[in-house]
Amino acid sequence: MATVSAILAASYPSLMRGAYPDDLLARALPRITSANSTLLESGTYYLAEAEDGAAAGCGGWSYRPPEADSREEGIAHIRHFATHADWTGKGVGRAIFDRCEADAAAAGFTRFTCYSSLNGEGFYAALGFRRVREIAVPLSRNLLFPSILMVRDIAP
Image (cartoon, rainbow, N blue to C red):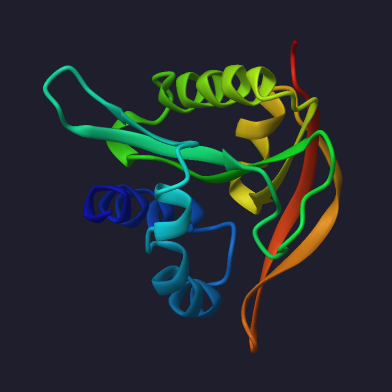
């Protein structure tokens, strides 16, 4: 759990700066840079390591959306992707996504949804996701985080 939180803390502040106002990041980062224990224990969340064992990235998928207790038939949800700032642009995120897609397809899912950060839209678009609409993801009762709902069919 500490390793994933360390990747999130090394990735999100630098990559999100410029896409969000500083005051919003100051409130949101403590929430979004903490690893989600339920997600980590799900068996569908992955950690990528470099040859020397250093943590390079993380990400996964879930059977239901982050804010819901129920699931939609055939739809899986991409969750909490991050690449350590030292590893961006080196294929780490794509490798994790490829693992997510293979496992979700094997489990019978046919479509992914994703709540992309504003700065993450290009990454997901490069993976074949398409923008549906802008959304506000609730991080707490008084904190909404501007995001983008994106979708992509899962390759069989």
